Image 1 (cartoon, one colour):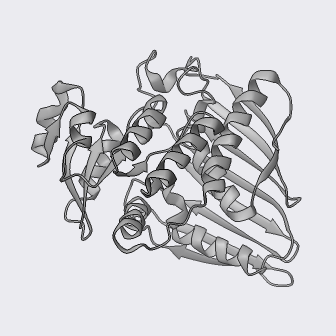
Image 2 (cartoon, rainbow, N blue to C red):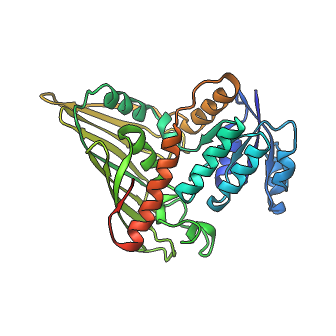
Image 3 (cartoon, helix red, strand yellow):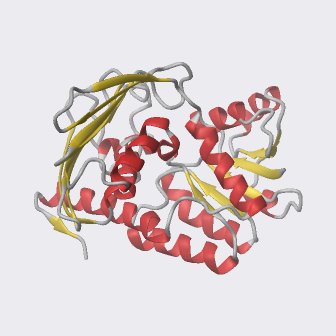
Amino acid sequence: MLNIAIVGFGWWGRHILMRLKGHASLNVVLVVEPNVALHDDVRAMGARVLESYDTALSDPDVQAVVLTTPHMLHEEQVLAAAAAGKHVFCEKPLGMTAASARRSVGACRDAGVVLGIGHEQRFDPAMQRLKALVAEGDLGTIMHAEAAFSHNKLTGVPLGGWRTSKEFSPGAGMTGMGIHLTDLLIWLFGPVSTVQAQVRDRTLGWPTGDMVVAQLGFQAGNTAHFQAILNTPHFMRFAAFGAEGWAEARYASHPDTPGGEIQWSYCTKGSAPRHEVLEWTDAVVANLTAFADAVLRGTPYPWTDAELIGNIAVYEAIVQSSDRGETVRLS
């Protein structure tokens, strides 16, 4: 059993606490929340609560921390956890710049602690199928991919909060949704070489914008484009196209919402498309379980350092491209 502290009790911290109740290998020892007005809510969910992150890091019962805090705090909190010898599961994004992500990865490696990341969609059954098709060459030479992750869950966030800020959450829907898509694209197709992006504010009046679209070029030669919109009903889709076939997944619900079906379609050259409905699985918990297995059993955690850092480099390039109106090339 891995004893963890959840740090931050906003929307996602609440979700994690709720989903981990009764987990076979993860035990929530306490929750850290600086806003004392939320402490009764934590206790009502059966957890001990502290105001101080430093106090949690000094607690010998805490083996790992799960960071569900605002983005701009991630690097500082990862470094503090690594220095205290605690394993770290950090919600996305790992950092706001590639240099920041590199420091976090380096600190965890130097301290010998496991670094997990909140990109649960790698554990989704449709993405697992797509990964196998790409890895085994069943789609042939990959030509292009399309991805979309949009919803309106956050439209009620007060203007002026960190989620609406261009300083703390640049790139509109990148930190909430788009960063998941770039993680999947890198996992499937390898390093990105070029980025062209646009950010717009169409309806919400947020300084960071309410939509982002991007075109990516990959070192392997293929391309991809994606969109993340903050003010439209839920829409989530991923498709990959190769010389020998294509595959597509469409999602009826957000990853945090049980029960939504996944419509899986697969077509190979000379054959009619095949369609199948896949059941929703809790990919969020699957990711946290993989993190626990890495800590407790030494099971390899399915991210490389290059992927962790490379995804933030792409995010940083998307922000730069949209600000400058030009293509950004990654080394």
